[in-house]
Amino acid sequence: MSKMQRIGIIGSGGIASAHVRAYKQLHDVEIVAVADVIPGKADQFVTREQLPGALGFDDHRRLLELDLDGVSICTPNASHHVTTVDALRAGKNVLLEKPMSVTLDEAIDMVQVANETGNMLTIGFQPRYDPNMKVVNEIVQSGKLGKVYYVETGGGRRRGMPGGTFISKQLAGAGAMADIGCYSLDMALNALGYPKPLTVSAYTSNYFGTNPVHHPEASKFEVEDFGVALVRFENDLVLQFKISWAMHMDTLGSTMFLGTEGGLKVNPYGTGNWSGVWDGRVGDMKLFHDFMGKQTETPIPVTNTDLNLFNEKVRDFSEAVREGRPAPIPGSQIVIQQAIIDGVLRSSAAKREVSIELPF
Image (cartoon, rainbow, N blue to C red):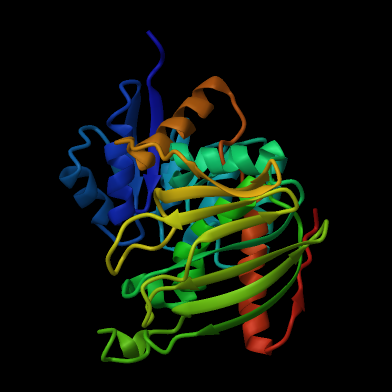
């Protein structure tokens, strides 16, 4: 019988409960500790989530003193950097919820510490486990599109603005860009092999979030609820990125990959105010190409599945730790999209194009 894998959870908000449910699906994993900065909250979480024997801490550093195989970090964005670096330096493998960090410098430091310590840092992008997302990757990477020179990605909710820590500049760092835009970027950049970005020209606004007609916490709303950007990459590739938490429109359109030999169009999944973003599954897909001299459109079959993508993310992390595999979604990739989001915010503030610089 395999040794029980010992997991700790840092942060006890709503997303932590999702991690608990996922870990409970794994017969060889036990959650042995929970930490939260609010006194008593970790103990309440342990009781509520029925984690017998698990310890509660008010300081994540005390949790990290335990013998643990890995930790899930489920804190507000502003705490991602310190908790991740502390966990890596304590010899723990880390599953970090998205977005990776608040600032680019923090993300770079996290990757460097992971490299220095040799411990795993994987970022929680569960849409990658959708079979249809994998098909998108296969098509783009197969060469069927030829050289991909233009990509359009993003998503938009007609109404779907969160509150609380999500709208605080200090705690979240960014708004729609960090919350749902990171999913859109990962969808496109992962299919493209995470190319190196060079420049960003962007615009952001928060007309809906700061309007009390549309948001009950309008007076506290400090981040963007809409953004659009043109990102230039190496190898003569350009990406248009657009995202919205709220708008007077039903959709911001499909994700598109344009290549010299073909094009791929992917529509968002679902309907309603909170749909239209790439935080889960995809809708229908179509390949545009020429066949025997004729312009042809080929529908790509979509797999309907009841697979719980969040559970798959947690399971893959657990198995990678047990098997000594590399990080399923390495921080060294996600730091690139963090650089893009950072560039979007800098460009919008400066009202001009800005350069992106990465140390690796």
